[in-house]
Each structure stands twice: as structure tokens, then as C-alpha cells.
Length: 398
Image (cartoon, rainbow, N blue to C red; front, side, top):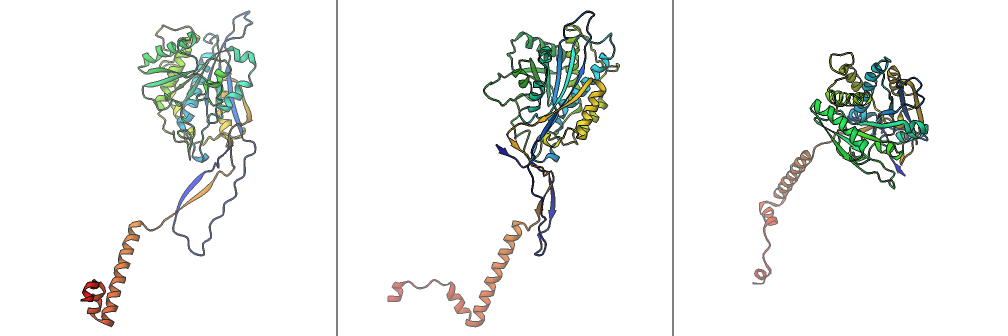
């Protein structure tokens, strides 16, 4: 088991301590006994036909919202994965307007999931899927996991577990490619087979694949981030997020989904066109990105009644129905401690250059003092004799 002391550092600059100035004592950190993770889900039910008793197919949109860092109060990570969360909320807002009218409600259920435990092997996603009824899991056509979509320029990657030649994966990729070409951006595909013997997963969609649910991860990253390097350390470093990149991701996913749900593939129809009642709201995206860029989200320090969890639940409730929070214990290799604040004292000392200069001046002073004392007591000749080479033995014998 790996033990990590999770704490928040506050850096202060102080002068050297005086002899009578005591060191500030800090409380001994205590182990967090049962850290919890909370998943939030909401539904947009599709429209059933008269006499249709079969369960409608479901499309799942998923994003993990938590960050990781040894200093939880510094682990903001607006692109890890705040950008995916904001994109999910805007997609939910757009489709809620479509589904609010029975005439435009699609014959697909849309499931939205905000998951926790992303940095810990997507532990929350696994628990969330286990909590589903088997019929619900079997009804999922495919799941789209949004991960770090806030700083890409023209390249976005679709990561899949099934080979690209798979008919269903090929269909989904072609639907995304059609929309991306119209937008002037590029969407590539990356295939990574799941190693069943290795419990560690690289992407969130791999947890779906373990339950035999077709899924993909949409990300600006072409390779999975290395744990404790790009997503960890003292604080979560992936904080740079571009509003326009998030908006492009929302447009790409929303238009692709709409053409799939309403059978509009091959038609150049913008369901969420600008200046329409279904247009993407940049202010909405910007405000949520601003909130996430200022909110630390390390899972073990977010209880189920945390204001941030409550805010996400409330926002999802505005756009979807049957919203609830699933809380469970966090499983993993880490031990967390409850000290969330500490002080890192940096003491100001003299520079090395000053020490060298002081040593040179002191050495020169001692040499001059020594010479003065020898001259004043024994004379100049004795001083010169000190530095004169002694005669060799041959000369002494002569």
C-alpha cells in the first residue's frame, strides 16, 4: 500500500529565527478512515411510440470531475477534467430544450454521468456501472467519455477499445468525422486493446468495455496521461483551458448525437446553429469554467454533502430528470491524511557570493595583521626569511 501525505502548502518568506523564537507546532495529520466518492447522474427519457413496450436505447455522456495532487487546495485542473464537466453540462442543457417538446424528443434515452475517482483508476465509474440494473447496461448503445477537451487546437482523438474495423465503432467515427469536417477540425482514432489481467485502465471508457458496453473517450491527448506525472505531483498542473475549445467540443458532440438520434446523417443540417434558440451559450460555458478553475476537487476531501457536489446536482437537475447522487467508499492503493493546510517556511539567508567575498576579506585581513606583527616585533628581514626557500643540504655541507 502506498502512503501519500495529502496537504495544502502555504509558502511564506521569513527572516532567520532569533534564538528565543520558537518553531510553530503543527497538528499531527490523522489517517482518513473511509474516503468517499460521489457519482451524479441524470436522465433525459426518450419518446416511446404507442404500444411500444420495449426499452428505448440509451446513449451515455460521461465525465469525471475530480482532480489529484498532494496539495488538494492547489489541485484545480480546469482541463483535468473541468473542461469535460462543462461540456457535459452544456450538452445536457441543449438536449433538454430539444426533449422538452414531444415533437422534437428523440427515441433515445440520454444518460448523463458525472463520475468521481477518475485519478484512482476511474474507481467511481466502475462502481457506478456496477450499480446499474443489467437491463439498463444492456440498453446503452454507446457511451462518450469526455476527458480534457479544453485546450486542443485542430486535433481531437477518439480512443476506443474495440478495433476501428468494428462496424459500430466505424459508424460512430464516421458520424463524428462528418461533423468535424464541416467545422474544419480533425478527429483521429486511437485503438488500445484492454489487458484483462491488468486492473489498471488508461481511459474511462475502458471501465465500460469491461462491462461489455461500447464506449469511447474523446480527448485532446493522443496518449493517456501518466499517473502522478501529468495529473499528480504537488498540484494538478493541467489548468490551461480555452473557452472556444470547449465550445467546439460541445458543438461536435451535440451535432453528432443529434444526427444519430434523429437519423440526419448525410444531411448538412445544423441542429444547434448559431443565432438560433438551440445555440450554444458561451456565457454559460465561461461561467462554469471560471467556477471549476477556482474549485479544488480532490475526491477524498469532497463529502457527499459538499457544496460543490450540491451545485453539480442542482445544475444537472435543471436540465434532466431523476437526478441522484451515488456515494461509495473509495478503493485504491492510497492512504490519505486529513491535514489540508500546513505552512512551508522559506528562510532568507545571505547569498553564496557574499560568503565568498567575506571569506576573501577576512583572509586578507589576517595576512596583513600577521605581516604587521612580524615586522613590528622581529623586523623586515625575519618576515622575508619566512617566505624564502631554505638552503639545500648540499649547500649546507659545503
